[in-house]
Amino acid sequence: MCGRFVLTSTTEHIRQSFGVDDVPSIAPRYNIAPTQDVLVIRQNGGGSRYAGMLRWGLIPHWAKDPAIGNKMINARSETAHEKPSFRNSIHYHRCLIPASGFIEWSQQNGSKQPWYIHRKDGELLAFAGIWDSWQGAEGTIDSCSILTTSANNLVAKIHDRMPVVLSVSEYDQWLDRQITEAKQLEALYAPFPADLLEAIPISTKINNPRFDSRDCLEPLS
Image (tube, rainbow, N blue to C red; front, side, top):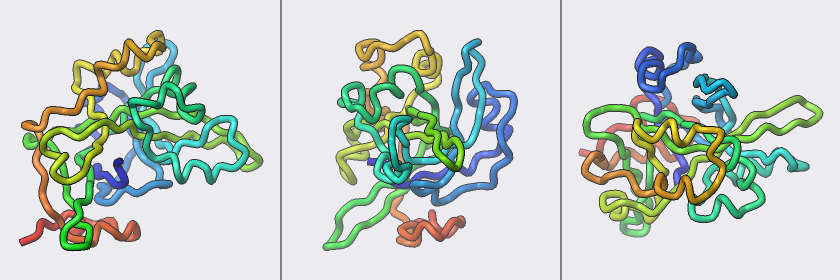
């Protein structure tokens, strides 16, 4: 699964990396947690990309209670096309979720050790995401989930799952609203190459979602 991630890139870098004109002004985020708003890149009917903030934790449009989204932060790529909660979204509402890196936890001596996993070259990651719009008495909530896949050789030493990370050449295919069949997307779910990533053990400060500072990513000495 993916339970925390990081986005510390500048607005200009995000704009250039994802080909969007307007990006909401956001401060560096060192400990993005479920139910918080996250930056998402979508595509409109004309084929242009646009950025916006969505709640992390997908609320299906048919849900009676938006609290269901608290348990919908991830969607397994192997089964999302079949699950009622994700089926409509993965067919028609796909998105990119920019990240500087993500957090996974390993079991060590009876406790959980957090690891910060990111690209060696410092470039942004793009998680394959899905989204939906829910309407209730308080208005409309746009929300999203991160797709996961089996871990690559690096992440497998820490956890058996990881986010689906897309390469730049795969962005258009993932966002293409004309592609709706599962078989047309299956190749995108392959684990991201391990040799492009590195994993660093970090402080357990990241375990507390109330902390959101550079200290959360402090490497263990």
